[in-house]
Length: 315
Image 1 (cartoon, one colour):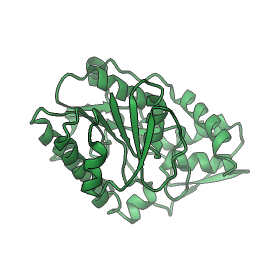
Image 2 (cartoon, one colour; image 1 turned 180 degrees about the horizontal axis):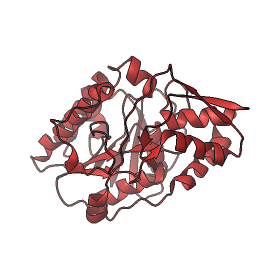
Image 3 (cartoon, helix red, strand yellow; image 1 turned 135 degrees about the horizontal axis):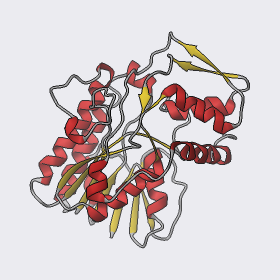
């Protein structure tokens, strides 16, 4: 098959790419600003801007599967201070990609949504638990509605029964190739950066009481493979997560323990934090796609720190 991977130099895209180039398929990878670093016989790199409809039509031509991992992304700081940053670019590029994929008769389209549209919950949430009448957390309003817009456009095109769509509402993903930048990363990447560079202590935002469902990136890549193989309908939304929520403070302590360091945690209550807590019920994916989470949290953290030490410490 001809497989197009968008956002191939990003966190999720790079991990997808490293797995799919090991197959016998023909892989085309799209990058925007970053320089490609992976080379393989069955891999072709293309540089371009997905906010351009002409480029979207060119790059999706003659592709069987489009894996859409390209997005304007950043961490909690930008979500809080620049709430528009996830809206315009992502709405435009997804609209163009979906139009181009329809015109080029793409057979499969994998879209990465997220869980920001879900409300807080003490129990794992199912896909059907999302109610558009529920109030979306204020700081997530823009990005959540942009994701929902793109999901609905996928549904619109699926009605023509030309392309099969998989919507993945994944939880917080972590692992190799993540952003380990204090200004642009999510909390996990930022914490790894702080811990690995700290001597005696680190400072976190808030008290760390909010809870996160954390999934190691290899399990997300496996989800993609299973969805391509087993999904039968033209449109489905699937949760993809660990299935259990851990407090931010607990996760930070696990990172510190895995690092082997003795580090004191200081709490900065003046800094903003996103006070949401939820976990995902992934039984639908288990039943329909034969998928289940395979990597335990402690194992995933250990693997991530091993990769970080080899690839990031000296940068």
